Image (cartoon, rainbow, N blue to C red):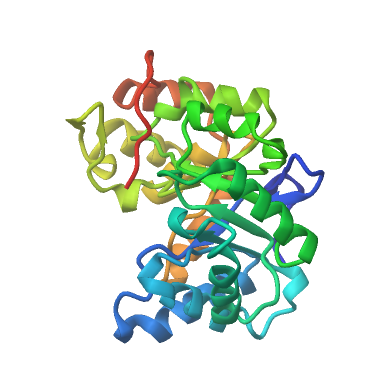
Length: 295
């Protein structure tokens, strides 16, 4: 397996999480792509990408089913499986059945990481109670949250055992750098890593910040020049930008074997200060607070 020392992140509970995973958002939405999506995830695992991220929301469980079929021929302890629960299911009346459904679809008896998908009106004290109970039962190894901003994280820290949160999964890429202003520094202070979804901006799709449309990542002059200087693809550069943060993991979605190989190779890309400054000329780090960005 191609798993290097620098490709893991230390979590608050003392365990380690891979820095690069495979995302499954938008998988399972077309049955014609089912086999190809399973094979893509399976290929990624074979090449050493052992973390897989999914959610009960994705295609109403079909993405979990695809993930389960991809992992079934591998030794479970070698893998790092992540799933997410709807906020309306994150309570003592529903979370147990939600998790059981996810586990059944995934073909496993535990999750390495279970996330509250977003906050909405979930009772954080009850969410944490349930997560800790699921840990005691051995159904999950650890838990975290997703799409939480600084105020959400501060509220979480105030409830009993809230400090046991291991990860916050949020939107982060070169075009969406809002977390760099306040959330990323806050989490570093509290030693809670970030897991970045859409780390290449949906293959460079149009992004927005402060409600203002910005140029396409893939056609930006500075992005193209920095990638050419390193003799890498644009996707590799965008992924390397996220991975150059020592406490940020990334879960790009890829199905084709070539794209998966590209993602793996991004772990080896070392961006210089000059590279980052050139990228910032087109996509600057914010100098003020930006509301939580989401896809």
